[in-house]
Length: 164
Image 1 (cartoon, rainbow, N blue to C red):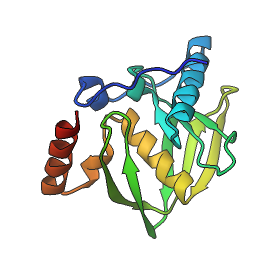
Image 2: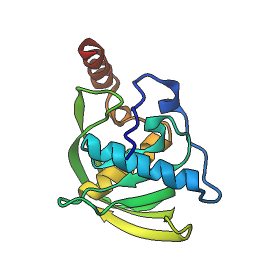
Image 3: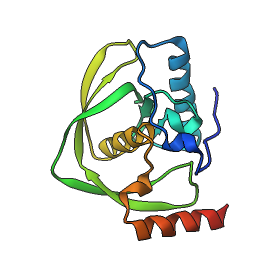
Image 4: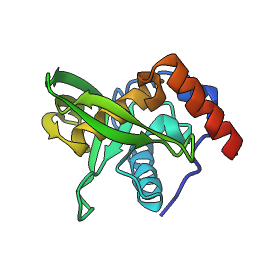
């Protein structure tokens, strides 16, 4: 079990789009496992590789109530988004101590490379959909607070700095 430290905001790697995975390697599989171990230690419902300083398009998501239902994704891409939105309070271990209510599509269809290196498509709804979108934002170099107005974002970052 390897719990990796999360990069502190404003590390530039959190604002850097991750590189696509061309072929899954043992190193990619180890990164997935490190992401799972780190996510479970928080505990959280997902992690993107940027969060631990790995600039590869790798994410993990487990929004199950019983845990142990992790979906590993390489190069995830949202194909469809529901029109209906869902509000959820989001946070990130990269900016501890603060959170914000974010509106995102309630459901998404995602295409990704699975742990066998095969292309897959999966529908995610509710917290699963929120977490997938949050993690894809991470590997695209975005943070959850980028969905807020400039005033709310500035207040949130200022509050986080005071907590450090």
